[in-house]
Image 1 (tube, rainbow, N blue to C red):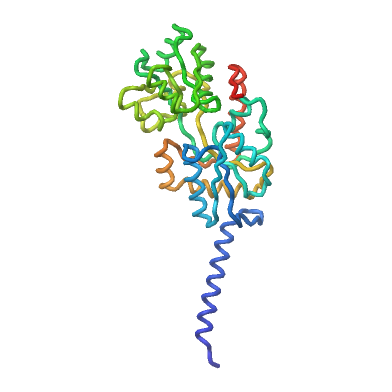
Image 2: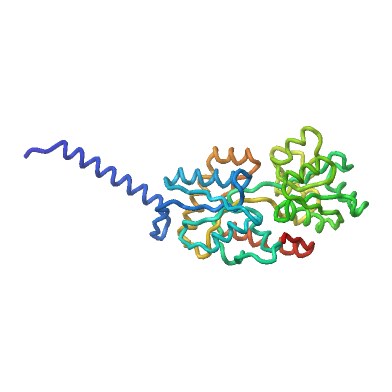
Length: 332
């Protein structure tokens, strides 16, 4: 019997490719026999393009697209401290094809606006915390204080004499400033601004004496001697400021607030899709190149579990609600 070698060779190739494609397909599917993603995924980012949250979002979803071979497309929907973008996802179908890559304002704006068109407690499914940055307590170099305790003593000795900048009411820095005043029982004047840039300009010009801000914003002015950093909001000291203590080390207990970026979906997002996305993003964020890119923007790559992310969000909602109600912060 003659054997058609050409036929056997082609059949072998076809069989091998079939198994390879099946393996790739199986690898890309979450548990529970849910085939996902089978088409492009829309990722709503509720800020303008080019900002810190947008940068972290694009780094994450672009790498996720590359890994999965299916586009995850950023859709910037800025406005009202993230409310416009949040609303889109809150009312989207829970099929995994409309997601929200949001930031810390998510746990702030529900309490500074009189009404938001969604329920922040019920309308979202936490997936993973992608990145987090420490806040730095920065003061104008002319302020006669070199430690957090010296600043607190100065504020208590001169009630109302120190001005603290609030970049925007929905910013983590604004919440941190108000929380700092409450925890230290100090009286300082909160001065609101329409963004981080004018707030920093006011700090450098001496119009305000202190601000809570992110590292990339203020680092260039430390070396020039125009700004002093007294403390950081993290649980550990930051590697690039090893001599600066955390606020907890400096005696300010229960100071748990910091900027963050993370991925959420609509309520009732199927558990297999949540697990799939968290697992894949966590793997992406462990890549050395991603850690380096995050670090370049002063951000720690996280990728925690949905349960851990949910606990963090709930903790911040509880804390922020108390602070905002105590100081009467409003955005409308």
